[in-house]
Image 1 (tube, one colour):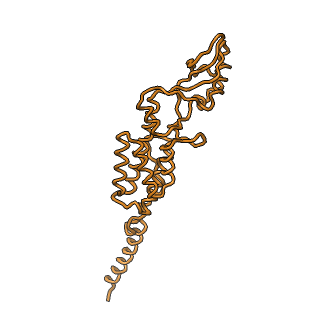
Image 2 (cartoon, rainbow, N blue to C red; image 1 turned 30 degrees about the vertical axis):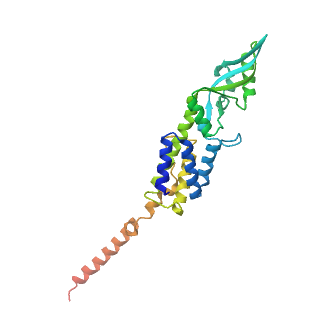
Image 3 (cartoon, rainbow, N blue to C red; image 1 turned 45 degrees about the vertical axis):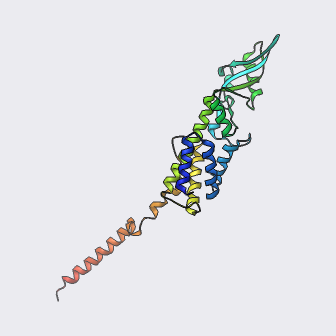
Length: 252
């Protein structure tokens, strides 16, 4: 399969919501081109992330808080907690979101099912402590969870699809026409395009990062079209014309 075919296959899979297939194709392309960045990103999306990984921004979700705890004579579960109940000095945005570590296949299944999901953030006990300090009521909360609608998981899928399409578009720009997958030039282009996509994960979804190497094409223009050569040739021709004119006008 050539470059054009594999890029078309990635695009088609991403547009048809088959993100798993698109990522598997990216793994194939990354292996052939030797792009560690593309391979690592595709593999983590396919297998899931660990709690120690640096997560892309789209895998941090902000959900509705619900608390579990006790009241005199009983217990309460899934008690809605408004964010403004937290102390003003504890409204760190990091406290109000949690990481989605699941594989892209699991995320897709949740999005397709259409049901809300409850996640327990690693700082659940800390949130409960802050809620208790702010509430100072009869309820005593032990854990705070986040509830996410299925649409939040659909947003993760859309973010991955967007990056896949940006990657193929950027690689086509760098490598117009058909190129063998063993080409060293292709290996560099794949790695640069993947780097742009990975950097873009924490940036604007509507931009495509372009490395400084993309400007090398203009430096390869033919030497006689470069401004310095044009000036030099023009100067030489001007001097030569002046000498010839003087010889022709010499009185023999």
